[in-house]
Length: 147
Image (tube, one colour):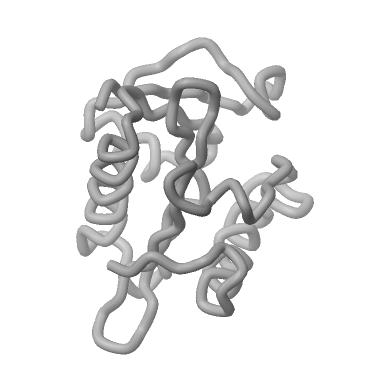
């Protein structure tokens, strides 16, 4: 797992793939949530890339959201799905947020992402009232977990 800038070419490639995946599920550009690359600069956040050898196979990030850490841009390349990449990225992000003094991770997820929902619930995330950019979207599901 490596920390990279949100603007790093590897990060951009993975984020583009993640947004394309979301776009295929929901239409449009995938996720219109405003994102500033500076939000993922430690200690206010981080962007992580998971690797298998020389190949990037997944990513995820957290950014400051009030007193919480907010999970963003979780993605695993199709060839690596079901191999534990997403869980490893999630655990690393939680550890990083905890080291940065955050005590809770929050996230928005869409109802058309059953594999993500199952993973978050397996990791102990529980539904909370919707918040943020998609708070009023009918397919939005918000989750939180104490770190």
